[in-house]
Image (cartoon, rainbow, N blue to C red):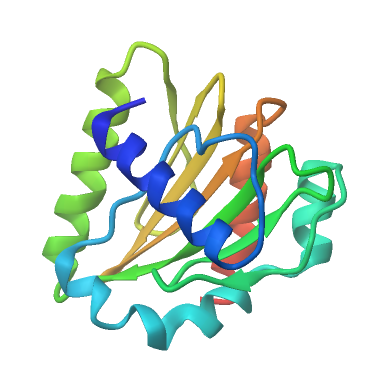
Length: 174
């Protein structure tokens, strides 16, 4: 896990603790919103939770999950009912499509450089899409215009197809 991923993992765990949730697994991969994106985080929190239903998350993982909870970051999180992990998802808006492409490319490069990660390009989803997996979980990112949608599953039983399914489902609501 990269240093950025570790910092975001700590932030997510602290956010969950503040919300009264517990997650024993840390995210396997993570997204880092751009500074411009944090100003609109609170405005997008409720929208992020509308991108995926509890039923969709449960179907993709094949495990029961709790309801989505909006985080201060603008993301939404559903934790597994047994406390073994969670699903964090949301849209990061950027000031321009070029800035979104740059951020997507940087994340892809970091993930590809990490020998513990397997990165797969996803075709037919947004302008660009990718999935990354490691032994702690999976992530899928979708670039569309000046926004990047990301889903991060922190659960050791996660597979890339689980993250891709959730990304495809959420993309229909963007």
